[in-house]
Image 1 (tube, rainbow, N blue to C red):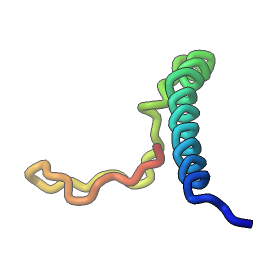
Image 2: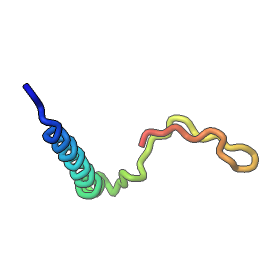
Image 3: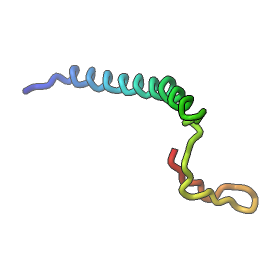
Image 4: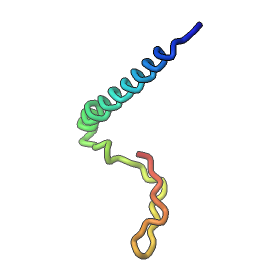
Amino acid sequence: MKIKVTDLAVAVILGGAMGAVVKGFVNLVMMPVIGHFAGGVNFADLKVVLTDAVTAADGKVTIPENAIM
């Protein structure tokens, strides 16, 4: 039950490449189509804010917002 290191390295590289291809397909092809049929929703800008950001008097953000993208 020996596993060659090169075979494992090739499998890891191919797995990472397939992950990038699937992520690109979903983000660039599938989500715009689903958003179109869902009434023009842009999923890239969609988020649910759990806690609003806290800003100081000078406008500087002291605590960033907590949101689900």
